[in-house]
Image (cartoon, rainbow, N blue to C red):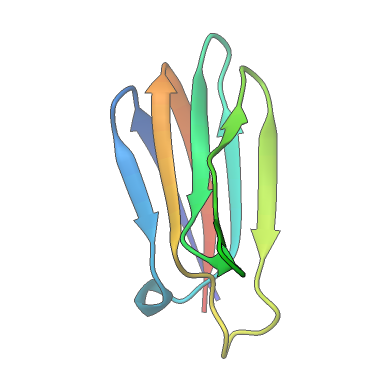
Length: 89
């Protein structure tokens, strides 16, 4: 497993696809920052809607196995910066 770290800035987007092999993703919105996380999955007829991370908030998502990496996740930094830590198999 390898670790990838990255910071996205205001107005930038980072897309998580299955081809990246991400098995764990942590996102932290830095002070005076905000951003959104959006999945591309639809349940029934209800599409995903963005979840907002305000200043200092974070989230960690983990796949069920290295054979089923995370996919279809769009990270968007609205203001300030957001730090990303990805565990890649």
